[in-house]
Amino acid sequence: MTDFATALDDALTGVTELTSGSFATDDPYAVQREVVDRRLARGETAVGVKLGLTSRAKMRQMGVHEVIWGRLTDAMRIPDGGTLDLSQRIHAKVEPEVAFLVRGGEIAAVAPALEVIDSRWRDFKFTLPEVIADNTSAAGFVVGNWQPVPEGIDNLGVLLEVGGRVVEIGSTAAILGDPRRAFAEAKRLAGVLRDDWIVLAGAATAAVPVTPGAVVRVEVEKLGTATLKASS
Ligand code: OOG
Ligand code: MG
Image 1 (spheres, rainbow, N blue to C red):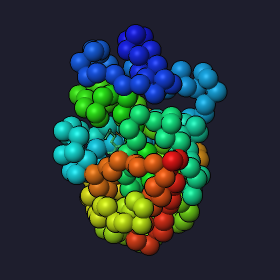
Image 2 (image 1 turned 135 degrees about the vertical axis):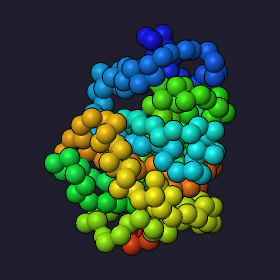
Image 3 (image 1 turned 90 degrees about the vertical axis):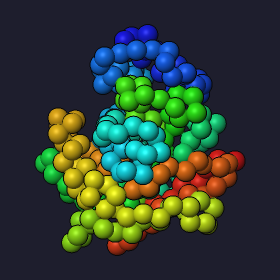
């Protein structure tokens, strides 16, 4: 397990890829915990959790058919309108999401969000245990403006734009039928959700590669936008 975690941590810090099949584990979440604990030991802070593969589009794209979860740290956060440093990423992709803010274990606010994923597995090709061990490809996130949860967030239109062009269109309905279900799943899977933590509900569409210099924008109906700019 330790060798596996070391290899994943080296791939993360060295911006290099691992080949699927090179490590085995029967407890991928323990490997994930070890990988994230190393980041925390280097001074990062836990700020929340993310759900993955909550939409059929993502399950189809990745060939994995099970909801998974990972851990978010402050080092992954990119301010709204901020820059994604591609030199520190292997083959980053972006996906449109919805974020929840936690208070008292419940949803306190909602915001449009972008997730940056960057699998440490070559060509984003992995098995279920491999992507779980790799902290579900977590590599960055942008959260737009927090707001009270409006009536009915189970079918809001979602647009993903790269360089001013719409590249994906979807609906929050794609996220387990209602993104609030993803919050409930996060609570169940993570055990405890702390105050002020962020929960990323999972992508509403397939993920799209980030090109150098591109401006990436998500727009969620009623909730607004979140933006990042990729380094050139
Ligand atoms: C795994 C992470 C999936 C989502 O929102 O579905 C994910 C991957 O696709 O590499 O974050
Ligand atoms: Mg995601």
